[in-house]
Length: 114
Image 1 (cartoon, one colour):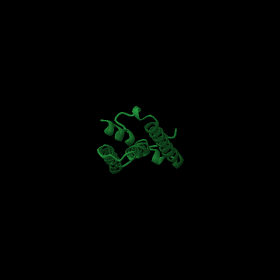
Image 2: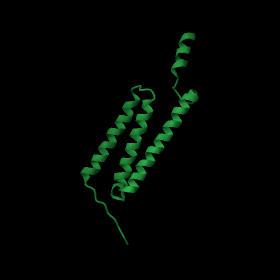
Image 3: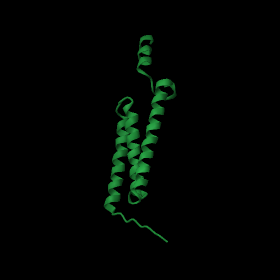
Image 4: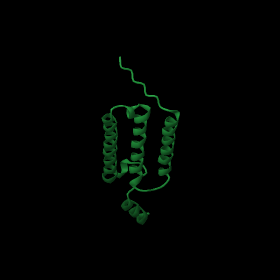
């Protein structure tokens, strides 16, 4: 039987944990600032980085064959890309589907009539 044990130091584990905490704080902080469509892009980028860190270190993919880690990170990037395009398209074609989102043209029209 081929048992593989990857012993990681506590320094590495706590470093990754600290990075995940910082990225979580960044995700929350971005919601307080209105960056338009960049809020979504930043949130997706942070989610991809966090998922990659968890898979690479806590699931030990970093110590597996490099192709497996590359396949995982590539898959996460494509999923984020597809979700991002779908949400951007939804906000452009049907703005009423996203709560609290009102395009600039509708906001100006509402101010004039109200």
